[in-house]
Image (cartoon, chains in turn cyan, purple):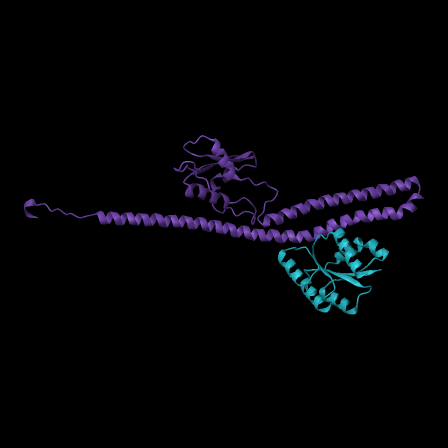
Length: 129
Length: 245
């Protein structure tokens, strides 16, 4: 069983980092990684349909154009059941509150704890299976 | 006046004395109010400067934190990838000559060492950023804070209750060059770079000790060796309390 993960971040190296972090999982076909450099691009990808089954969107908050919180709200109107995790370097309480209120599943601070993230993904994949 | 008579002028000055006393009291009150206002203004200015400095520090720390996270993250990844490379190459490496294998081992060893160094320096920089953020929030950095009031209370309980209290604070730091000695307590005098020091700390201390407590503050320093401040706030008349707040 293979699942998709969509990572939204305006910094290109974030994609490279995820690619390297998930190299084994991607090789084994456990996860297929998709990347979007903006909130708009993420919504386009979502509208086009992501294959295989998308189990989570990981989004940065501070981005030019549509920011992560607006993207989160937009996703929740289109796909209320799709889990969204917010990732940010600015882990302040106000953003955390807003993200939780808008329906984010998780609020992760950079640097991301990948062991923890992988554990969460395993659980999400388990639910989807 | 014919006949050299004498005129006695008699007037009651009680009223005038009272008025004079009132004027003096009013003047003293006004002067006290002025001093208090000046002190308040100085501390306000200081607080404003510190707040602006705090914001700037937090901004810089956040800007540095992001690229630093990448450095640390990719350094970690390099180790994982090296391990995976060793694993993947193992069957092929086994068939190589001893000499070639030794060279490969050496290079992999060096790369692993480099990663450890990157991680070490990354952690150092990370620590600096964290303490910048902590400092900008008004928390303590890696310097230890000392409860001077508690320390003095303790010392006073042990000490003989004499006429005056003397508190000396001495460091083993860089000392104060003689040419700065005269201007030390002047407001806005600082030797720190622009934006790093308001130059108000000692002038406010001077005010607190001399104006508010009616005591004295002196400085003794040998450039390159030490600085020692001696404050002598008077003991209050009330038994059991020394004039320390």
